[in-house]
Image (cartoon, rainbow, N blue to C red; front, side, top):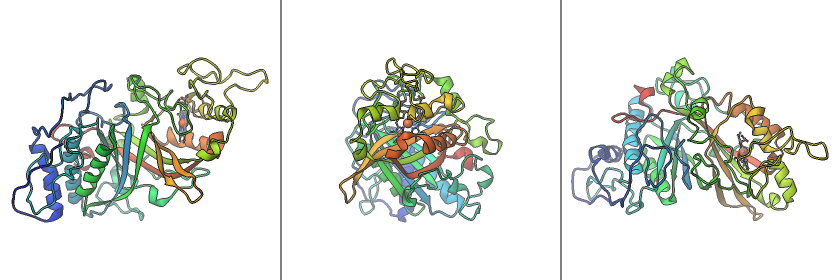
Length: 426
Ligand SMILES: C=CC1=C(C)c2cc3[nH]c(cc4nc(cc5[nH]c(cc1n2)c(C)c5CCC(=O)O)C(CCC(=O)O)=C4C)c(C)c3C=C
Ligand SMILES: [Fe+2]
């Protein structure tokens, strides 16, 4: 990206300047911004491309192949009028359209020398890094804690968009949970992802404030068969049985909200629900656990990722197969058994999580784990029943602590000329 050059024009109030700078990106769509050889694509598989289209039927960052880095952010809206919220979402749309294509916020349009630059500048010269920005709306955007309609949209709140219930063994921290808006920034370069959240946060100044955020690395899921399965911090392959972009029928069935799913929230059709859970992993305890115990808890072998009932990584687990001791080879309390669709009314979800480490505690234990993200068509039938079972019966839970949580409705993709949330707010 290239920093806009500075010439002296009129200065206006800071917030309006931020919006104006962001909006200018639309008018300056031709700005090339120092990008190297690159190909824009609408295709889902991502081979050989360095950027994904921002506009489309669905938001990017869901079935698009998971990138290596994450910066997830949740915001509290401080704006009190619908007009102000609209302005923010329009400014975010313009900025996201620019940044995902490797262009600076403001499109390189010069701003006054005595005003803050239109873009913070730390992504200048970097390629787009397959940046995707995926936006969501929390339940509190629709109604405040007293049930008051904040922006005249309470009657459009999806029935399934409620604060997630308390699950057994939850240890949630308020400062890492919920929020009115969320943005999932994924890129192959952490600087590109952080740059995006920083600029969106800056643009939101006076209308929305960062509530909590989470950095992630080493994606813990593949969302395309073109990707090798990565590993989580327990050392196991994670994402083997995930929903993949190459299964469009299953994605339609389990990820995208359908036109008739919720009559009061038709605006969400072609969107989805995003579940975020910050899950701390007791890795020091795990590292003192035998390999036998580790594999029994997961239900798969650590090296290849094959189910303990036999086969290779992508062999379906045989949950009925028993060993010489008469016990199921995939243990009754193993994670893979309890999360398997046959044990959950056939439901599946698209997982898109990341590993994280946020320093250590006073005892020298890493504050580390998995930032779990899943996209589902209906959290009430997909995520909530599965999490309830896992929290209660999963042997892995002894090594896990859920410390953050959020549920967001993810609107459909932005059509050319439209803006984020236009199906909800217009
Ligand atoms: C409620 C949903 C889930 C949470 C929370 C969750 C946390 C979690 N998972 C692992 C490690 C693995 N999970 C695996 C499979 C798997 N996990 C879920 C759901 C949740 N996981 C599902 C639906 C599945 C697929 C089940 C299937 O269809 O077979 C695996 C196996 C490899 C794979 O298929 O991805 C591992 C390993 C951890 C460490 C964790 C919390 C920190
Ligand atoms: Fe899992």
